[in-house]
Structures are given as C-alpha cells and as structure tokens.
Image 1 (cartoon, helix red, strand yellow):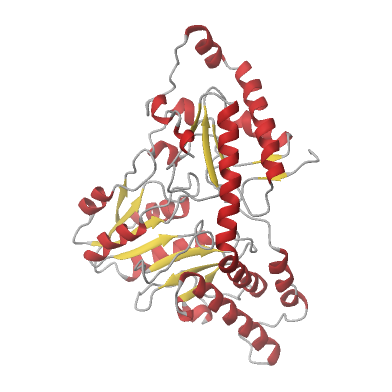
Image 2 (spheres, rainbow, N blue to C red; image 1 turned 180 degrees about the vertical axis):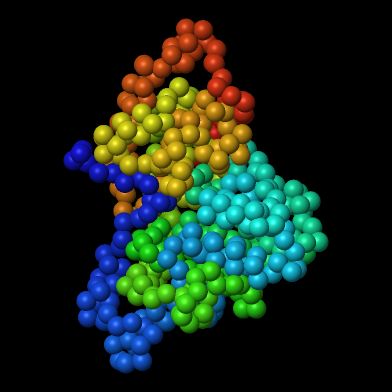
Amino acid sequence: MNAKQIYLDNQSNTRIDDIVLDSMLPYLKENYGNPQSIYSLGQISKDAIEQARSSVAKLINAQNNEIIFTSCGSESNNLAIKGFAYSNSKKGKHIIVSSIEHFSILNTVKSLSAEGFEITYLPVDKEGFVDLEELKKSIRQDTILVSVQHANTEIGVIQNVAEISKIVKEKNITLHVDAVCTAGIIPIDVISLNIDLLTLASSVIYGPKGAAALYIKKGTVIKAQINGGIQEFSKRAGTENVPAIVGFGIACDIAMSEMNKNFEYVEILRNKLVAGLKEKIKYIYLNGSITNRLPNNVNFSIEFVEGEALFLMLDAKGIMAASGSSCASKSLKMSHVLTALNVDTAVGQGSIVFTLSKFNTIEEIDYVIEEFPKIVERLRSMSPLYDHFIQTGSRMKAGPGTDYDDHHDHCDNI
C-alpha cells in the first residue's frame, strides 16, 4: 500500500468529523438504553434522537415530526417511492423519474413496473439537465409521483428543482427529491421549493454511515416498508441506531455553520484540479454542467485510456477516486449517467470522478496534478487507439454518441 493516502471519493462516503465522533461515543458506552424503554436510560436515548431530529429538520427548513430516520439514502428512497406508490395506487399508477437517477430509484421503479406501475424516464441534455418540456409532456391524468435528484452524484449537475416543482405542482402531483449529495453542501428549503418527500444522508456530510432520513411533508401518505414496532411514527420499525442518529444530527449542525466556508474552499480545490489537469493532459473532457454543479465535483472523460487500469494505477499512487456512482464502480463499463448524456463509448469508458471534501488540501491536489498525467501518458503509450490516432490523425470510434468536439474544451470555462 502506498504511504500516501489521498481520498477523493467523498460522494460515496466522507471521513467523520472529530466533533461528530466525540458526540457519538457516550451513546456507545454509557447512554446505551433502548429509546423505546420508559426507564431513564432509555429516555436519555429518546431525547438524543429527538434533538437530532430537530437538527436534521432545521437543515432543510422542515418540522421535527416530518423527519423519519432510516439507515441510508437507498432505504429512504425506497420508502419514499414504494411507500407512496402503494398508498396512492388507487389514484394512479404512473411515475416519472429522470434517466440519471441513483440506482436506488431506478431499481425501485423497475420493481414497481413488474407490479403494474408505468414508469416514464425523462431524458437529459448533454450537460445533464432534465428536459422540462418532456416533463410537461409526460404528465398524465394518472401520474401520482415525480422523482428527481437535486444533484447527480456522478456529474454534480444541480437540477432546477424550483422550476420542476412549479411544473409538478401545477398538476397537483407529489414531488420526491433525492438530496443525498446536496443536503448540507448547498442550501435546501423544502417549503420554498414545495417538496413533498426528500431524502438526505449522514455519510456525505462528515457524519457516520448507518443514518439517513426521509422528509415527509405533513399530509403526505406513505406506507411503511419495514413492519414491526411503533418507531419513527410507525413509518419505519426497528431499534433505532442511536449513536449514528446522534452523529447525523451533529453533522447537520456543523454543516449549517460551515456551509459557506466549505463551499468556497472545496470550489477553490476543484478549480485548481480542473485547470491543472487540463493544462497537462490533452483530449480530456469535463462531463456535466460547467456552472450549475456541486463545488466539490469533477468528472472527466480521458480519451485513449482504459478505466480499470486507470483506477488501479491511481490507487497504487495512493489516490482514491470513483468511476461513477459507488454502486456501479465495480461494473467497469460506462455508467448509465454518461450514456444518458450521449457520451461516446470510447471516451466514456475512460471516465473518472473526483469528489473533494473540507479535509482535502492544496498539497494533495498538487500531487494529483503531478501524478495523474504521468499515469495517462503511460496508459496511452500502450494503447493501439492512441497509436492509430498519432499516426493517422483519425479516431476509431467504439460506438455511437456525442461528437468528441462536443465535449472538448468544456473545462476552459471553469
């Protein structure tokens, strides 16, 4: 293992904040009572959960009793989609999602389609924005739910949720927003955005794994997907993970106080990384919106390299990144997100995602800028595609998709 460890996969998980960790320890050792127990040790845990619920609610401008704790973003997405669909199937069985949603949305609606629900997948443009005209056209009399990510985990593009909400609400349809990669990173107000259901998670805002939440607007009816006791207002049975929930609450408090500072800092790191790699590597293309993207996201496609070798060589240098969503990173094929953006297969298979955190440093970014181009150069020296290009000046395309020129020089604008 390389002595240097540079973690740039902060969209899949972040290092826990020391303050968050310290807040959790008493609930692992001294205050270990079951929060459903009426004796004092249980009530200490119960009070801690309610304090965390208040912190999560404040982060998105919700009411405390509108927050349901779950184990992860995927569970919250399942509860939102299935719970709402099963409770409202008599009103209709048509659901609309974007084509670049997380797999916890795509596979959930796929399972619903096998049960008689109809699913419409909205296309996106070459930057990753949902086609609003297609959204308007897709809405039907039997449409009961629209689900759209606030920002995409892979390309970082921030959707125009305000406009999406306006379109959806004009037809009195319920809106679910997957905000796992935005809640705590950029401001979210469920009231001003008129959101009915919203997913958020602890592990991407320097909190622990094992804690997430679903915001359920008062009056929105959903059916529990885990049956048992009365925990979480009878919406999610099971013994609560008190230490993780406590940590989640503290992580939300810290996120609120540090949001502007962290945004500015990681944006500086991102811009330095983009500029540095663009300067040193030819035929490198930025995927996603240039301006409306998360401050910590960089998604490059590098032409004439193969993805698996790229990641292995990066890891050997102590640099940890991703090849798309963390749930797809082992598939070693072009992601569904880049496919939806119509990225050429030959280019998209050499894609890499860097996501930065408040714990990353300028020195780490300098190291990546120094080492990554060497890796690309070495891989290209072994590539018959690159050799063909150098000798002939022409590219051998691997499949249909966007023109290479459509992606070229996007990075210049960051």
